[in-house]
Image 1: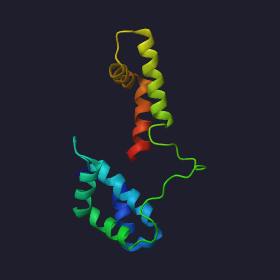
Image 2 (image 1 turned 135 degrees about the vertical axis):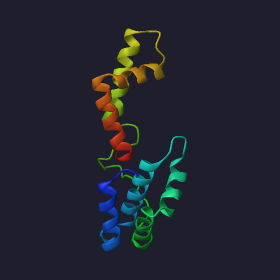
Image 3 (image 1 turned 120 degrees about the vertical axis):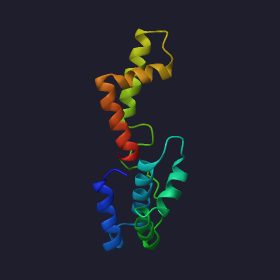
Image 4 (image 1 turned 180 degrees about the horizontal axis):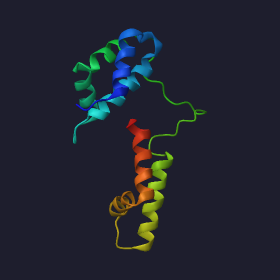
Length: 136
């Protein structure tokens, strides 16, 4: 496994001061790091189950179990967090893909999206979307 300084910091916090985060914040950390280790074709649920049994995931899971509060806090109507799939990275990619489809009528939507990701602007938008979704 490649070196992950963020994971090491999170593990240290889980071991030394698990009360510094709420249950929902620990859940988000577990999910983020499990998603980073997810294999192709593997569901997030399977990756999550594997991660909490992993030596790196156990301290985070212990902190999660001991934390107070709800496991998940849904975004409220007035929150600034965009709904999944509506962030600016994905919106920019869709805009680039739509432009490519308009200029080449033979492209399908998936083909246009693949070509959009290959453009410099699209690559930046793709990375922005990926970071927003999984923090990587």
